[in-house]
Length: 387
Ligand code: ADP
Image 1: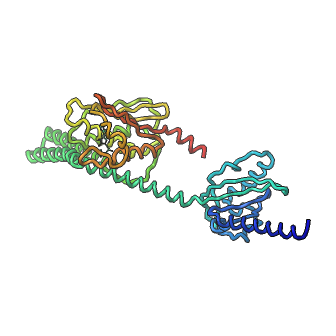
Image 2: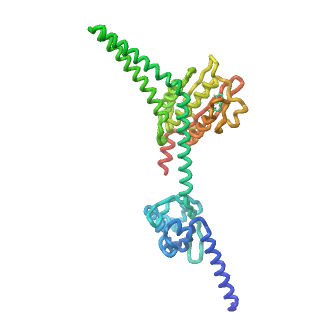
Image 3: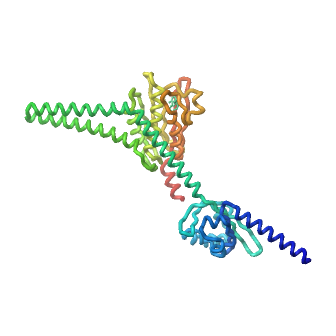
């Protein structure tokens, strides 16, 4: 080999090395290379930003430097297990893990690992993407969604306000009448007989006060803003409360037939959100039945193959074909005062529960039939157990 060739090869090598370094440093993702002993060989600028260690500090150190303590301990056994058995836990797969900053904070990253075999042994290349921006955006979307769902509940109570006020007025009026009757009895002068009559009107007044209290607490629970807390729930009881609330909030009461399955598995659900879906579906059905004396809504709970479900059907006109394509989209409404948010929010709620809201539109003499599908509670427990 002539001197000339050696020089040009050295230039070519340093050129390609420079190109490689600038390529590594241009990358937005952290890129690092470790050897078989988990020593850091390459550590780009993005890694410096991500982990707070400079390349000078990091190169030559064990990769545990940027791993949470618990992973760090497991990592040695991962590497040696892979060396011994060739079993791949992460190489070529990529997964979400936690990384550790120099200041000790831990944060989620997506890690993809590749392997290179070189004459000196094996090297592993890790590409690390910071997942915090994505997680924060997801969290923000979840919060906005929860706000919207909550606002829709407040708006439903607002729409039912007049009818609810009327329902509340009834027990309050009754209490007043019982108290007046009691006062009259006392004025007339007391004996053993009037005492019994007094006790009886007092008991009736207490019963009416309970009834008014129950209406208020049902309304309050429905509009209360709470962190969604999904858990195993008895769907029949949850649905029944929603039916009661809807009936209270209707001026023209509609006939509601309840068919509850007795052997329903517990559903994985945030009760108030499921009630919100049911209130929406029942109110829509009642609206479709307006002016039909034979109008009837059926609400059924049933166990489908993949979980418990609630079916709300009516004997109204069905969904008009032209409304069908946009039925679950926001602001699609056939009503003068409707916002067209009910079904869109209901489906969002269903899907955020890992379920769905589907419709059989009916028509030609058949009413609409909505099915709210949910997950059984065990599935979630099993899933949590896997994590
Ligand atoms: P809104 O009730 O504010 O109109 P929704 O999203 O709840 O909004 O409903 C959208 C539209 O779907 C309604 O305006 C109505 O045209 C139609 N719809 C919903 N449920 C039924 C039903 N059971 N029967 C007939 N049409 C229905």
